[in-house]
Amino acid sequence: KMAADSEIIAILAGGVSYHRMMAPYIFSATLIAILSLCLNLFIIPDANKTRLDFENQYIKTRYKSVGRNVHYQIAPGEFVFAESFSSWNNTAYRFTLEKIVDNKLVSKISAETAAYDTTRGTWTLKKYFIREYNDDLTDNIRSGKQLDTAIALTNQDFYLTEKTVETLTYNELNELIDTQKMRGDANIKFALMEKNRRFALPFSAFILTIMGVALSSKKRRGGIGWNIGLGIALAFTYILFLKFSEMFVHAGVLPPFIALWMPNVVFAFIAAFLYRIAPK
Image (cartoon, rainbow, N blue to C red; front, top):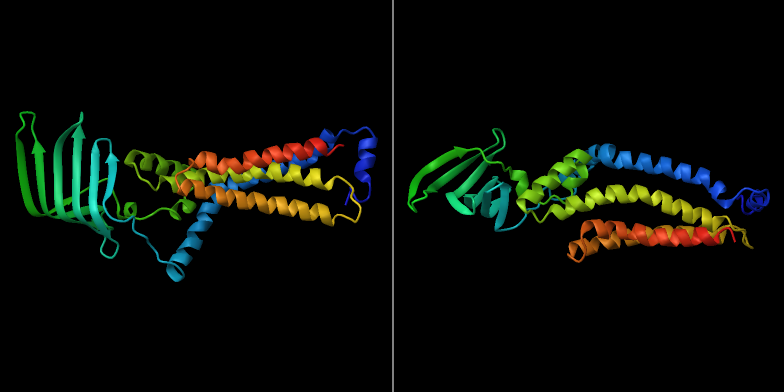
């Protein structure tokens, strides 16, 4: 509107630089970015819990298994293997827990099944064998029908966390990333994508603001329709690029940090070019 009424021409002709004219827009973009960052890190995850609970109950399947032959490192030197896991009875089949010290296997627990008690947070091993290895290459073997034990593992660790990460605050998300790194969990890509997305999206406020002002500040014959159309097209292209870049992570082509920030880098150059030619 200011460009259509030739107000921007008057501002620049009055001695105000284009950089000074951009100051209130950048200030507004900063406020939007800070608000968006706070919402993404702390407020929206709590809201997502309610949304996902509704979707899981009425729309989608509540859980999705991670598949067969699950192998996790639950603690330094402690490895868990399960051939399969049933979400109906929270039971892992062909369960194995190995403890390794100084690259040597010191103990191994094998069980036909391992059932998780959601109330007590413990596992019940059935038809188990415990083998402890000694330094003199001998071993001690114990067996039994049932054994209750505490393991740093829950039934939730056997489900994909593609949507779970959306319900975690920033600190909870970092804790999950640290845990999944230690375990060697392939699902860490979902947590890393969510973390980088929460920082990348607020930064887009600066890019879209600069592009919007640069495009709309020039007076064009025929009104502001062309400026609005071009600005909306660039904005949708940015969003499409952001979604498309996530496919590189799923395909294993790019790490989450590069893939999620690549649209910002590309469109930052576009915004810089438009900002440079705008005063002319």
